[in-house]
Image 1: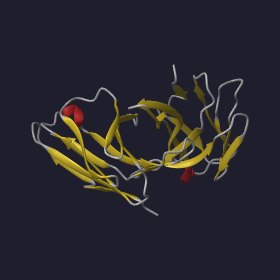
Image 2: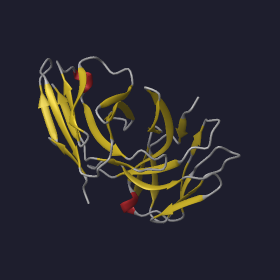
Image 3: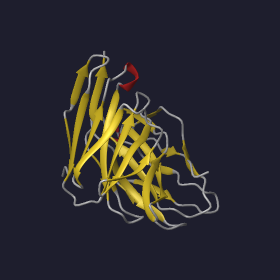
Length: 118
Length: 113
């Protein structure tokens, strides 16, 4: 299939500790991969994206490497802060054919809720 | 900077009523979406509209219907709401490139009593 699977939540960490949220994808292609973050009371927003296999994306101290061989895109941060408490989503592009034209949609993983305690 | 606007923020209603949620985007995008986010934060795509053409409809109950007057607006109507419709409904828009970012609105929280 073309699914995205990520770490089951919730995850609770102490401030200053490291974070890894696993994300794996199934596909025969190399889609653009995304990490989105949703803070309480807001809609999801892009954290970063990586369009090419074996490249790295990063933003706000978070990073992920698009690992083509392992079909993984794990999110990492060396030292989390209380303000990082949010839900994190891994996502990929899927192509849909409609009326002879190709359109793309984003499919999201199940989300991982992170709580960082002071 | 907000570019996808949703109204209302919250809506509380009784079982069997009809509700309508509005969404507008100012990004000039051709494609808009509606997602349902349940209490476990699972994001499920409901509809995708490209220039008023329905592209994706993921086994959504028929009481849900998207309504669009132009490519900047995509509303969601629910006829005869049911308790399981209680959720956050998120609107989003996106460009047509494979690498384009999807931008979300703040969501409308629906509570069905």
